[in-house]
Length: 345
Image (cartoon, helix red, strand yellow):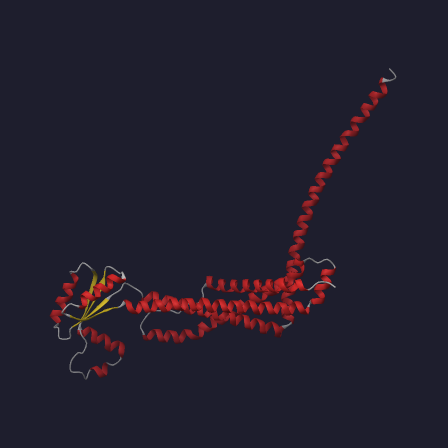
């Protein structure tokens, strides 16, 4: 009996000792997970605060060096405004050519000796053709009146004995293929009533060729100017790195990471790109405002409803976005190249 009692008491004392150990380990695991979450949130907030502080300090450095910053921003603004102006000009040319483009027409200049009745009968015969979609007769009198209205030589034409203009039949073909149009033009030109058949698509093709050439020129010049923006931003960042060489070495000595060291220069490139793009946008808008009146006067002489196209909302955002991207990319190239050469002694 004496031997059983100690064993029983030892077993009873062992059970309470096991339970608190399990509870303590679970509590420590819960506290560790909570601590890990708190540390991650605090680290993220610290990262955001450092980005905000670096962005403000980079902008302040530009403000404290007004002359170098102004010169750099002026070069960037001009380099971005030139392709912006070329893009707006190309946009207006495309809009103007789009208004002029239409279904191809063939103008049939009738014989000058052809009587008005014969011209009317010829136009009715053209209406019966199955390869034409529309036919319009412009009589000699209508042509003379239109010429007087457009040319402004009404006083001179009054001294003529007779109307020198022929009657014109304007036809619109059904088939707009180039080969079909050429064949139809040749067939109509051989009619006895027709003196000459002129296809109006020739000048449209020339305009389209000019627009394609202008597109290519704008792309090439835009690429060259974008390269110049990269070089200007990269050189400016390089000079900034050289002026802060001692500060960078001290920061690396105390354990600053490469990302921490690069961040102020990256934000400098961002501010250069953003502010330069905004100034370029102002240049483009002011230039368009200055030429809008002469363009309106020129358009009124041709009696068209063409309106000068400006930079829209999407185009403006694109210009500013391109400026920011070029600033960031130029800064990153300069930082990645020149910071590797600076190591603490």
